[in-house]
Length: 406
Image 1 (cartoon, rainbow, N blue to C red):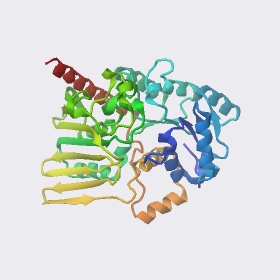
Image 2 (spheres, one colour):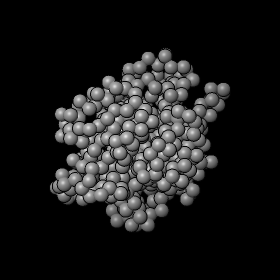
Image 3 (cartoon, one colour):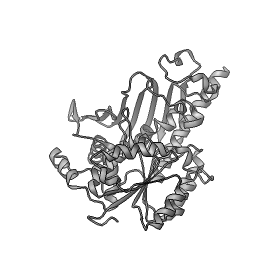
Image 4 (cartoon, rainbow, N blue to C red):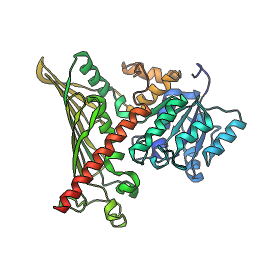
């Protein structure tokens, strides 16, 4: 547990956009940690194979309000180098962010076993934040890692940040307070593809496709809001790239460079039964231009309808109850799930928010979002979401193959 007033050491594995951001994305984990800890943050190191990228990051940070937090940051090429040199300097980080591509995580295979390497090198005192998805391997492999992390005793959080939205927590509160039994969950995720320059994203052999890599956030919310899914009931179909309706007009990548069998579907539609009896469905669509996504999750129960809308840009909850047919809307100032995610994790480690963060929260009259257990997505729970996404992908590919053979 971090003592009040002392420095809080953070070690980053991966210097990519998820960790340090760029001009085109909302995510930037370092900014949220800086905002919560303030001057108490001490970034002890960044592990990344690109010296040029780390140099760029540290140059940008040196002119930012958080410059002192990076004054002594070291660059390490490997985890082993970081462990050896930090031990020599008697530096023991409190938190490590595993923000490498998922290919390097979530298995027991050499070179793809980052969690196992971290626990072996740094022990159980270090808390871990692991990005989603937890791997790119088949789901069976991630459970061995979950067991090791459970046995090691490390505190672990996984980056399913949408759970931490205040509108999502409000929805959960309404369901709980009114003893609403969920009857149905319907999710739609329309992504904007025309600015996606990363070729690997379009290759399901590289990043597992849009359900496992991207719609995983909505699959996770479907589980969070509706309960555990009966995986045996999952069915899915897809609009594939080779079908007339699957031709896209505004791709930045040359899809001809991707093997035909590895190109992603344009639309995936799935439905399932929950273990509690409710019915769920999801549609993921690759169709919009620009950068703004369109998304919605609708939860239905006897007398109640809860609509969660625009969760990435302007999160809003619309609620219809037995009292009125008119929907009541809920929004929250600065409903930033990335910040709330790290506030929950850091708070669970005993790290208190800096004075500026407290001041900002009070000025919003919102108070801090601090769930009782701090962490809303454990590694084991994230493995269940990972299983769910792969089941949808497998079922959609099975149906596409049958359709081609007809």
